[in-house]
Image (cartoon, rainbow, N blue to C red; front, top):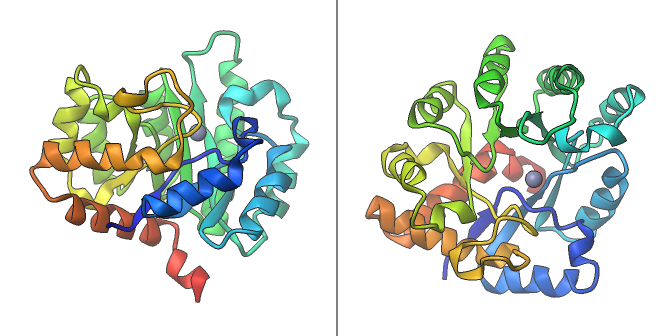
Length: 259
Ligand SMILES: [Zn+2]
């Protein structure tokens, strides 16, 4: 069996309220021994902190997600700055731009995104980025702030955009969508990209793999993502598991934290 790392899982979500411990246990049985839990709004920070404090394999990221724009207030950025003082935090996230969902003010999203990128740079923390209908602008924004590192999660852009990101040293998070037969563009990216920039993710409870379409997703299912990626690249599952787990440990500096 392999050791796997889920680089993006919303385990604090209410979708797991009734069986969270069982979900964590199933993940462990599937080899998922490391999980990164990104926040969506200020209300989620305390519950993620509590959750991660009671499970050594869970690691917290704090941030303000663009889709939850209406829950954010200007003072949350200052509050976030204090939350990032906590030595157990591994990243700033989930942050980014979403121009796909209607009714979310673009300028206000830009304000929160840039402020949080600045915080990440100050603290030398990696960022977990959400980009939907806005990848071009996200890449331009990341370029404008030198010294950033991180991951664009649930990548759905072009081959050229993927290449731009890994050349900037950014990682690409891939999950359930890569298991879909029609995802030809993603498949080409998987076969071409350097493995050192690839992270596996469940994005649970969302984005189930092709065999669990329409169901609640959970971290144990990244074995399906692993299987698809190994097959596409013509590599063993063991080598893809080892490389992507090492990538997560390196990006989020987990070995320093564990010691
Ligand atoms: Zn997410």
